[in-house]
Length: 241
Ligand code: ATP
Image (cartoon, rainbow, N blue to C red):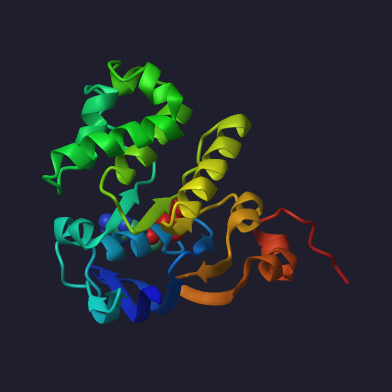
């Protein structure tokens, strides 16, 4: 089943044309990765899914339902949870309170408690630190918390905006391992990443966005081999002939 589809989506910030007729497709159970340089429109893609930016043309369809005109909380209720760029945990709240907030669209208290223990199984460090203020934790731990908070909404689709940004190599690896285990639990993942090597290692497929247009799409293994990705995102030297 197709989980998420962008059909010829255009978005603007005032006069600035950002997404210029993009098409993406994410199938149920996949990890799909969106690569692109700064300013390409990756965060705008995420905001468009969440209802924070409205398409002026085109449709955004989630499990057969058009979501392009929904409010962010309707989108979350429909089953999409974001892990935003820069983590954005509530720094003056405890770890447990942050996780509880992730379940704000739900009222099934027993299941919420079960989900919190599942998040603690995934991240034992969060359990140890559940009473600590989120702002006092390291960047890597805050990223774990942001992922845990998103999981508290019981999403079927997790959208992640640069989950490895600013993290030490050990946490980068841990984040990608976590993304894989969440995916194995049945959650579909659409992820923006600058760390193309790691992202394409765990992804099924990917898209490359340049100036608001998809210039390349393929399975992850082929993208890793492609000249454009190798030169632009994996830092390979450009041959001068
Ligand atoms: P980055 O990796 O730098 O976050 P990105 O691919 O996520 O890049 P976007 O944040 O989607 O890029 O931005 C796409 C374009 O839209 C950029 O040119 C940016 O300057 C512009 N832009 C983003 N947000 C706004 C805004 N609120 N108002 C006006 N222009 C914006």
